[in-house]
Amino acid sequence: QVQLVESGGGLVQAGGSLRLSCAASGRTFSDYGVGWFRQAPGKEREFVAHISWGAPSTTYADSVKGRFTISRDNAKNTVYLRMNSLKPEDTAVYYCARRARIAGPPDNRFDYDYWGQGTQVTVSS
Image (tube, rainbow, N blue to C red):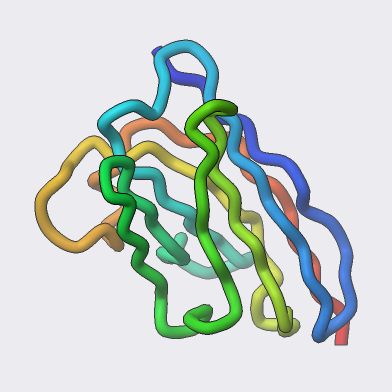
């Protein structure tokens, strides 16, 4: 069993920054990629970023490319999402998840098996 806990969300003005953390307990992230997704009210959950565990390699949604950075700390069993130049349209609940499937692009939420409870990010204009 894997437990994922997100933290670091909050209220920030447009142009500001936040760093989200995703800490794993129980079985670790070893050998699994980890993704960040977000869901705004009334919208589908959408892919934000993914980091593989082995290399690591990173993938970003076009909407956050150049502004967000995903990273991980093996020793702390934690994955981070640094978010810069935040926009009001970034407002959402952000979730981290463990990717169960290795092949194919990492933006399919159905390829992820364990999810955290989410952390709210609100960007004011």
